[in-house]
Image (cartoon, rainbow, N blue to C red; front, side):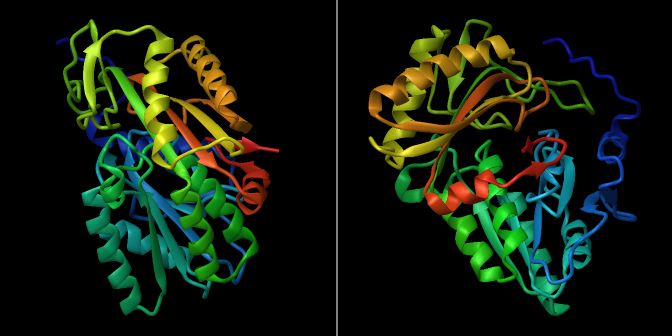
Length: 334
């Protein structure tokens, strides 16, 4: 298989250089912490609960593109598709602590759990209270009775939005955890892959998939999905995905949702809009109202071809936090 071409310098310097570029794109609103791959707001209100998001780089704009107004306060950034190390997370925790504690919010992956938990223990030793909410929205990655083993994928966006909203108005860490957990528990996603992304250091693809096949439910790093099939028409594919998403919560008539149709890296807006057309037809037929929708690149895997569908079921409280304005590189809302 041909190696991917990428506009980079030294492959070993990809992460620090992309973070330098991201800092420039924020025009003074964030800075990089000295000596570690972590980004933080340049101004933090006293007495604020810190919202620390993070994970592997390579999924831009997730996570480090979601620092901003009513969003994350800082992001711990791992190498490409790798968890940030405990020292990175701890350094950022100390930078974010304003005396009210810090919430760790990240995708449910073994490496992240290990490293963030280690950082939380070290923070506790230094007198900083840390609580954790892990995101597990991917319905394809484990059955409902083992929901805490599911992966976090593009549903991270909606959970970060809710968490950022409540952390901006409440100085009670327990309240921030409660709302964030509610958002997580009402979010469901599923993805499909058509072609692999690649690792910048090698140019090698992260998995192999024949040209005439797709994989429904594949994870953002190439983790196995629920089925590998010959290419399908968009409407048939969306029906298969929506059947699993809707049944899982379940979503029912009368529900109000936000919808995210996420490009995994190399899917055109034309394709996303065709997907959106069918998703909306299905939701309308089920009596489920779409309060708002996002289409575009929010959680990517380099140049992976494919997309994911995410729904979050809203109530008045979650709607309030979703409606709060947001200003970040990856998400803006007025």
